[in-house]
View 1 (spheres, rainbow, N blue to C red):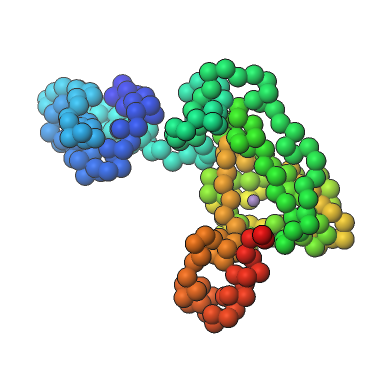
View 2: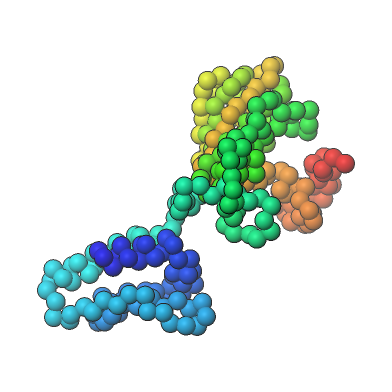
Length: 283
Ligand code: MN
């Protein structure tokens, strides 16, 4: 258990350990196998610079009791579990606050922490007012994420508001880093997401209602009413990211080759070029 705990502590703080397990899974498994079957000291080699670091040495007696062996097996199981880096949102923070220094040119996973910060870094009026919906899709997403609220850096949450004109749509899109939950402020919406098994989950939602869109799944909201609608959205990421399916495929820069799109959508070049011209960024 001590072993598992020690390695868990190391793995959560030392990227090299994680990197090693990802890049050299065979070596990692070998060291575990050696531990299990030959009762030799366990070592994890960090190979970043072809150097071998001795992280932990546990002398396991080959004549140890069955209980002792059980403890070792349990320790390894715990180790395997503790090294699983999968998580449901942004990584856990390691300090009270890490207010984003958005001006620093150094890049890390997230943003560097500012030395001096104040209440301003934790507030914003970004989503106080309705956004302008006089655009192609008749909707506007306004984020209140780490870019607007630097104090959100490493906190793993953010918000947005989305405004919809009558007939407006927030077209099918995904958030690679977050699950989304919306709360209807005004109006009514037809919303939905599609599972990876290609099942559409859809519902008509009204003022006061909430709806959740699972992380990474393609989803949309459409205002089929004759009055404007608005929602507040919450995300379990400081910067959920958005990939809008249509604009990703038809309005990227440089453009996705027509041949890719004609084959994908089983239509001719003319149809593809028509869609591309309709979705081209307005100048
Ligand atoms: Mn969304």
